[in-house]
Length: 167
Image 1 (cartoon, rainbow, N blue to C red):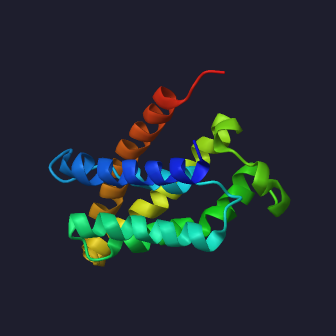
Image 2 (cartoon, rainbow, N blue to C red; image 1 turned 45 degrees about the vertical axis):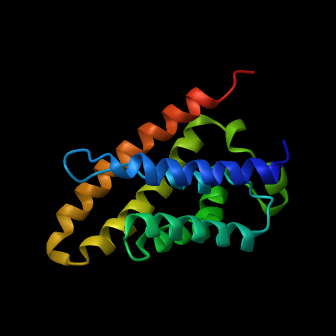
Image 3 (spheres, rainbow, N blue to C red; image 1 turned 45 degrees about the horizontal axis):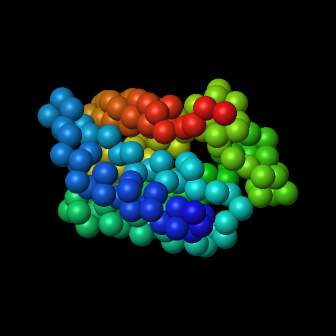
């Protein structure tokens, strides 16, 4: 299958999974996983950066549209999409010339774990900070970030374990 078609199907799958299934899961009354950010983790580095940022923004905007959250998902998503290259350089020690050969599935689990956890925590911290938008609710922001991140990370690593072929 063509890589553009595969990426488009993955984009649509994550979007519909998020808005039709995961947004209806309310763990502890108000915490749900945000698995749609897996698109940012798994998008190839060798593709054009503007296209990637645009697709990340559209994904966040679509989730906002269906969640009625007013652009918070779009901002959080575009932010982690923008800083993703910094964390690829930090955790995987990759340079610009290595981007065309980079594949998250072929990297060491420890580096992948740190990369995914860091971007997930940043996304969720931004998201919950904008939802509460008050320093009085700082403990609620941190607790929601922690709970939603754990829930998202469990689903992400479980999904990658299930859907990855053993070679």
